[in-house]
Image 1 (cartoon, rainbow, N blue to C red):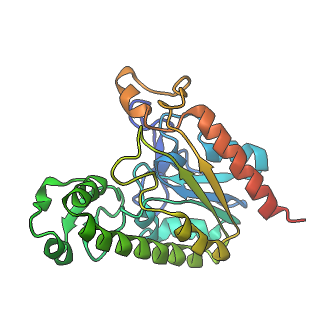
Image 2: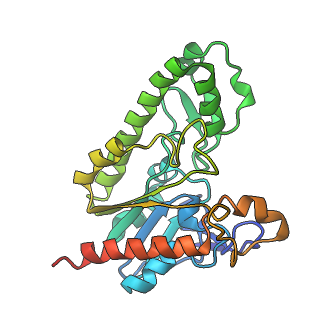
Image 3: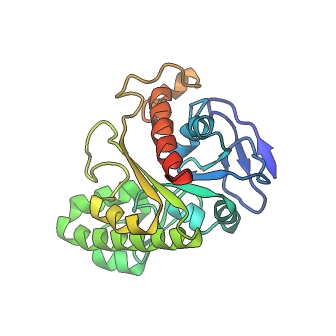
Amino acid sequence: MSYELKSVTALSGGTCCYAGSRLQVRGPVRDLDDPYIAFLGGTEVFGRFVAEPFPAVTETLVEQPCVNLGGVNAGLESFLCDTSLMKIARDADLAVVQLLGAQNLSNRYYKVHPRRNDRFLKARSELTSLYPEVDFTEFHFSKHLLSRLKQVSEERFETLRLHLQSDWVSRMGDLIAMMEGRVVLLWLRYTLGGPGLLGREPVLIDQGMVDSLRPLVKGVVELPVSTAGLANDVFGMDMGPLDMPTAKHMLGPKEHNRIGCATAEQLQTVLNPR
């Protein structure tokens, strides 16, 4: 295992890599010999600019180690393709899995970066055929890509949307099966200052999709949350003066505490059934 401390102007709290994995997750490295709960997710689980992200809050309340496997800009594919992190998740007593956007998965239409899943790498032939008038070399992020495609043609975007959503449900089912259903899903719903072309975060995830997964897991925590800028929750964030614009789009300390409390309440029910 390796540990690398980053300045608070980069990734607050530091990052680490567990043996065999190339995904930078929240540090420091934790002892995996004793029983633990694993938290899988993206920037929200990582807790960028926050000294005590919500997995740490949950750990205090449930009195059991909570291993933070959140990675900045990580998506579902970041974990499905990482055998080392999936082993850590499988070996946990329970895994809390954040629901991540359906846009950040490689699929029949396009390919994303294997670890930073928000990065669009290339369009496949199915997408160039569906949108022959679009120059795909101008896109670097999947959300930007989808927003533009929806602007070009709502009708054709519907074909793409249905595929992405179906693929997401299938891949989530694969992840849950790998952990034999010992999973609590965490659905954090919010907007970045407005609904935008693609609606709320996580992108393209709706109630029907989540409900289809409920019979497969131990529980679902649903929370509407607000970014630090909208919630006036910037005070106490670890950042440099140039980081403020980015920090306002993250979750602040009060919101992390609220999420940690809600997650702990659900976990207590699962870990200590009456």
